[in-house]
Length: 434
Image (cartoon, rainbow, N blue to C red; front, top):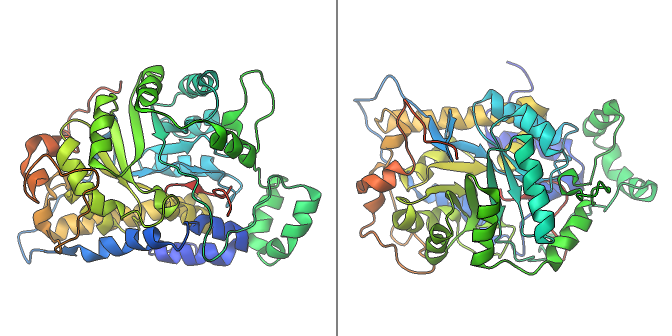
């Protein structure tokens, strides 16, 4: 077997740590304060225990679904993360991998590659924005993404600019100047494989954000310049969310929902989908694991909008658990970034194959024909597992999502047809929800 192949996401993470300079790897791990939310994101999945069958398994199984009108071959979507300087091809390599495995590419507005190149590599691209800058600037970004062929918009609005990590923040320069390169050299020189990948291209890691270039044709801001604009922009209201959705005029996801009352407000604002997420542990530390918050939100709004989950997904079995508790699909961040660092585009494909295989094993062992049949009855859910923030779910009973046809319809579709598409700041490498 090829030595570039790895069998788990954990193995990809170990390879990424060996291959990347210390600061670059530290940016992928990220997190905030003491890292309680990151730990809970993983621990919570492990608390859900399977109840497999011993016989009666199905020889043929289907894993496909749709997200925001886009058919995908497995319920795993690439989550947008910023400035992927772990590999020279960055977001373009990730987009190609997602296209080859039949799924959606989420592209950050803070990405290191332009939306035109990414959408060309994967026509099923969703463009992600923050509430940053003037309304005119935001409309320009939406127009550019639409012209490039983006099929949907992701609005990430949950960031609170929480600073500081107990283990220390990695050093990332604003620009890779000669002085910065000299400071960074001791880290890079001991990671020759990563360094050689960039030297072969004749380029250094680009810390600019081309998708935020101004309408007047001026230069794109650096990551930290874009971050400064974001910090200085007054935070959005729910009316602003509705305005942004209207300006886009197509499939629209609100990312970072953790409360039931916010999920209901998102429905009122006219969104197509929401992502239940704690920003991968990069926002307010001690926010509960996303999987703990998912059931109550899915029970309340799952019949009205698509519900996805982002945070802590490392295995195909994690995907199965999220779908069973009401998600239509999951979004991954750190997992594919580690694959990208380990082996470029092939490493991302490797990660998606791992998740597909693990999900198929779960569907098989639980005796189902498709992911649409997964339900809470497939697991032991310990008492006190759920966290219902901002109110109680409107459906009654722990297993309401499984019994509610409307909720199940919100995350599954007919196989024959899809609905119409209508102390430091976040790090400059792989910033986003993971």
